[in-house]
Image 1 (cartoon, rainbow, N blue to C red):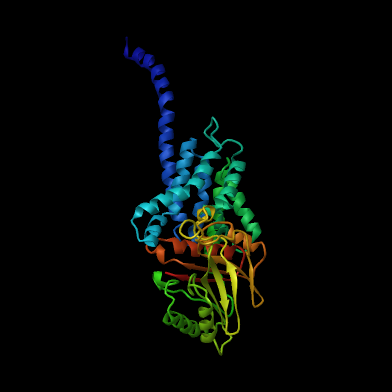
Image 2 (tube, rainbow, N blue to C red):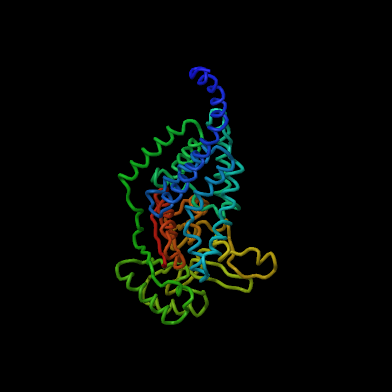
Length: 416
């Protein structure tokens, strides 16, 4: 057999081998690349830098390009776990424990996001392009992960980036961002990516921080874990002195972080009203209202002449605060979730969209508030337990994005 004949005789066998194994090898490399890229997209998009939020909008593309349902689930896990990477350390800080409880909660929190996206993955056509129906499937996934009940752990929703891409567009901006996300799951995704880049660059070139409403001031504190736990007179007197000092710069409404006033009791009410005597100051601050069945994480307003509970948190932090199984088993305790209640509150003729801590991480609370066209957004948090993570920065970036999208003034107050 001549070399030429030998070459020709091996060609069909070699071709058969290559056709049998090469697609598998290519799929493995593609899978590894997509998973790695999803981790990068999650980490960069949710780094806490507001202008980087649009990076998260690449996730639907990576999801729909996955070569199998398993890889689609792994891509979803890579994105979500990278975006929420501060959770294990935060849980360890909160419970003064090692990382294991945090790691378990981290994985459990990702279950609904990963499960929904894996189940709704549209599959691939013979040409390795997205199958038809991917738009509807991703729309279903986006809605399920953005709204209760699955939206309760729906962190890192790409639609949050609408405020960076389309500042001031309001609901039209939200629709445009949703359309861009859906287009990422189709064969015209390059056009969608180019449009995304164009709007992103245009917005970044003219970016400004949301306005602070006249007469309002947010006060950031660095009290660590003592905030909300120290109920001493000295603690409250120091806060009152801080508020009065801020008011001296011309503020009438002063906002303090979540848990700043601790337990909201008649004694605390009297102390603050006495401390504000002789001024027209109104202090908006976080507190806790306790009864025999549990407690409400609230936002209160106090002045020299009156006090009121402005808002009861719609979605406290699951597990550490909101523990619904306690009520199911008759034990009581834990923070109550007022899911769709009071998305907007009124204070001295000003309509306020309140967002407490965890509500800045999930999608639905801010749009629900915007349905009622509030005048301003007030976002507070107590992030001492997030030390060493980007969680507070992500909360602030999300609040800024919503304020920019709907062109609303923003007041924030955080404790670290």
